Length: 419
Image (cartoon, rainbow, N blue to C red; front, side, top):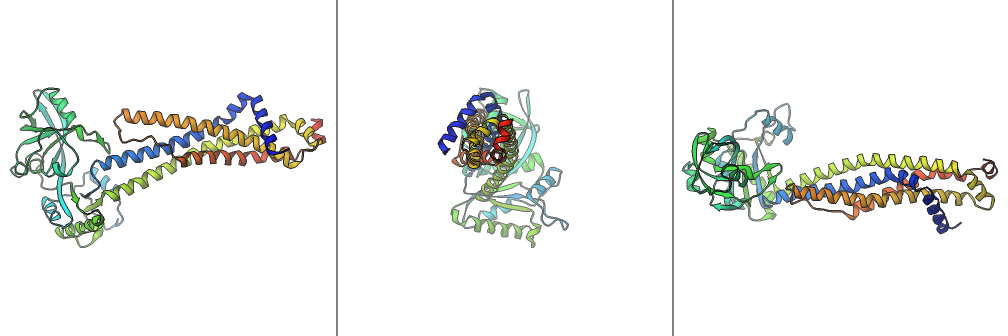
């Protein structure tokens, strides 16, 4: 019996038991759909994160505080440093002088520095606790956030400790509604701050809502609200992207000199380019995708085992048919081919349905992301994911179909006819 006839007979056998065929392929359908959804979601998350990073610009270098490594732990990670700061460890060594010195480097166009605080803010009885983002006036030139109304505060206002504020779009709505805000005063820590501008809607970036911030001059926040002199980060914009790594290394040397650090393992800061941040995040999302695919592989194996069990049942049910075929000339290879083809067809049918289901679920996930404020999420179904899905289908069909097929092919025709 040739391959075409074997395929026709397999399709006929599968169509006779439609419900059993559908139930048998359900495990493969779910597994393959999961492969498509996981890989599509991985690409969507990657595009979301990279899109959010891109809103800061790809031509920037960030210098931020870090808890220095201890003598016992010379390989402290950024995560461990972040945990230490959450637990109350303060790093107060990053200063405005560091920013001024960084601005003197040849490849630096400019920098802005920042620090965060949280205080109660009120206007005419409306009270809200908000994050205060203290930045230098150069924030308006470097960051990609835009002014919707009014203006950003000036350098002279920053240096003069002026009590002025620029509101995020959501904060403006919460305190003032639709009324005009320019020139009006809000209270921050019982001090009057004049509203000079409102930012355009920007959304959340890395789970941080920029639309709910109050932007104030960094020196005003340091001296009049928080009572500190240090910064949390310095964002620098460079001119030549090909010198980004060299410029980052120059910043490291400069800040070490300012902080009297001779051992790089004792750094109380970390310098990161956007390219490095994107590489790290791409690696993380890739690792998460691989982990999820490994978990999905479990459901594919379960589906394959289900197919193997059903094929064993089919061999038992069709013992007389196998004996009859062997008595009229079918050999070992013919019977083997017959049952392997049926197994492969089961998994391919399950694979195709799983791919279509996975694409549909991925599209629903994309629509959900878009409607919930994630405009950078992209709907991506890669050719690689489809090839992997079909490859899994064929592999599990052959792998789990061989053993039942061998059992059928080895049946003694006389004994089979007696069954």
